Length: 263
Image 1 (cartoon, rainbow, N blue to C red):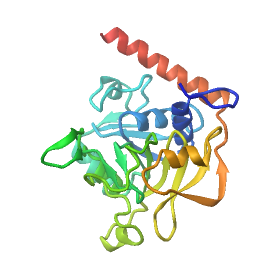
Image 2 (cartoon, rainbow, N blue to C red):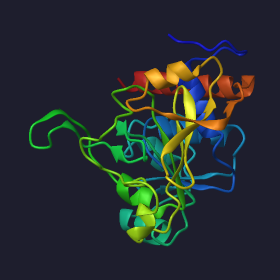
Image 3 (cartoon, rainbow, N blue to C red):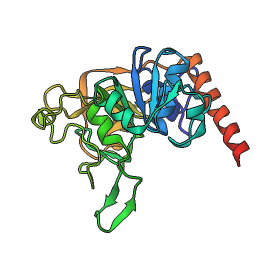
């Protein structure tokens, strides 16, 4: 297990969740994906952003799960939500009306312009790997005012060319979103276990703006499938606090215990 040379000591995966959680505030209304996005969003809710309103695709609004859900159909979401509404209401009243400030997404693959693949690896007709598919990610990425992407970094995930574009980021780069009539900001940050990347304001190519503690430029380049760019004013991600690490581990421990009981 890789660890960072900071106090308190945490894994790179924990650093990714913590760095992602810091992107959120109590003013946000956030459409949450299952998995890593759910971890980051609930960590934010339990630490510095208690007023954040979490919405899951199953229709639960202002959800406050005590354990992390296994899927959008997990009963924990309904049990801890302010209200549960129909899926059309989530997308028509909340998303399409511009009431969702943040979409938080994961992916299997990403390219240099923050386009995402969650459909297939390899040829579509005869894929090497069949992935879960789009879900509602394309609509979330299109309709939320801005979006964040959380994904572990490796050459298999950060690829020169996607096998399939499931979710549109910046397309070919530049003004491609605007040319297609998309007026939301799109992905404003990609948070990984090694670094944080943000789109160049002109080209929209992802640029490394912050390295996590203990991570070098060489670590990042080796984990990327294209020659990655680094910002001129490259910074270091602030190390995790005891509150962040302890809250994250307590959340994960509660989740493990709850799901062990179910089985």
